[in-house]
Length: 160
Image 1 (tube, one colour):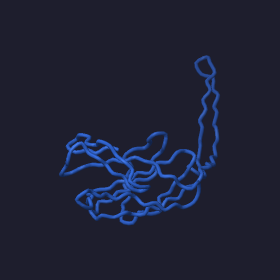
Image 2 (cartoon, rainbow, N blue to C red):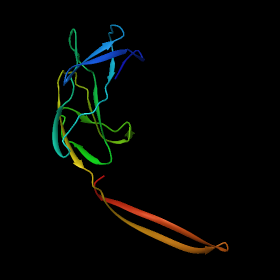
Image 3 (cartoon, rainbow, N blue to C red):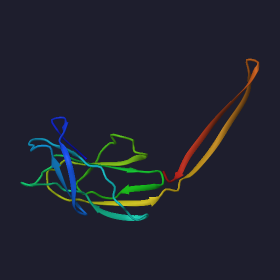
Image 4 (cartoon, helix red, strand yellow):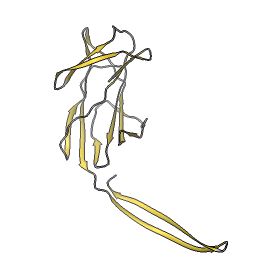
């Protein structure tokens, strides 16, 4: 977890209040624009559609109104995920391609400053790719020697 304010990390520590609630402690009281970066994993069933709530922010003084929320979804090679929902969130071009042995598959952003706890629809499946391929091999006599050149063509028919 990182809490950025004036380009410095103001994060001190965190503690778990419940299964879906964390308390974040900062090095000193802050005001103005704060950027909170949270990384985590959520257990899902191995196949099918999963519904998950994304986090909302609360402070001691009441709800925190985010100016922008961004959610990026990464998958490892063994699974395929599809983001089925996030009402009010827009699709955004990816800013990264890989992270910790996983590939970015979706990025969503919300700029509406309304406190909410949106429900994420996520479909998780095993990734069983089917690939068709061909090899074109050329053998030629050139400059008093044999030269071999091979070109491999692959097309993913199913999976990722």
